Image 1 (spheres, rainbow over the protein chains, first blue to last red):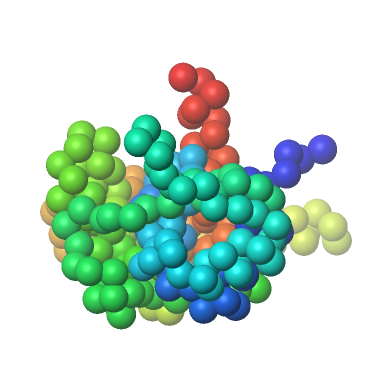
Image 2 (cartoon, helix red, strand yellow):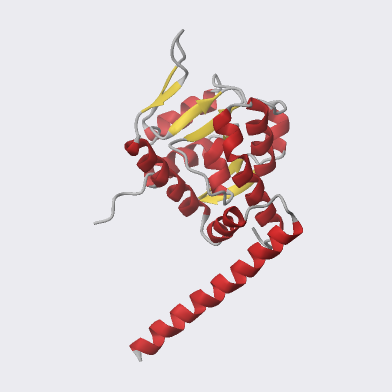
Length: 156
Length: 68
């Protein structure tokens, strides 16, 4: 029997709740790159939120029975509960403009039945380049080649 | 008849692969910084639904983590 897919109905339900409640967020990082066709490997799905105190986020979490764990001195902010285990919270993106500006450039990608806002590949590349970390720099050639492939592939 | 159907499917897949290879070659020819393997795999992934691309990435990410 096939193993269950890591990103399935529960995770899609959480994204659906975020969209339905009007939460300002973007899918970022390598999950965003993978959604846009990059041959990139990741263990989680990074979500960048405009405002973690937004009541809409609380409502979205409530819809799915999940909860928000605020940051402590030694831990980042986290989600807990149904369908949120794969998601990491991002509060700052290196090398990018303010959330509102980047959100204005977002591409909308259908993930199952829901359309989610996703940081465009060229902006993911800008962010990875800005961090300067070896693990981020090492993925740049694959991301840049994906951008080249997308630009020469009609309808993607 | 079934055999003919399988051959037809395999032929379609081979034709798609040839077209994809030509597209990847053209992209790399137009940009010397491009790497054929990256472009080839990106073109394959672009034929899939976004959620399938994401699941591929996460499955491989989990496998990589287990191997560490």
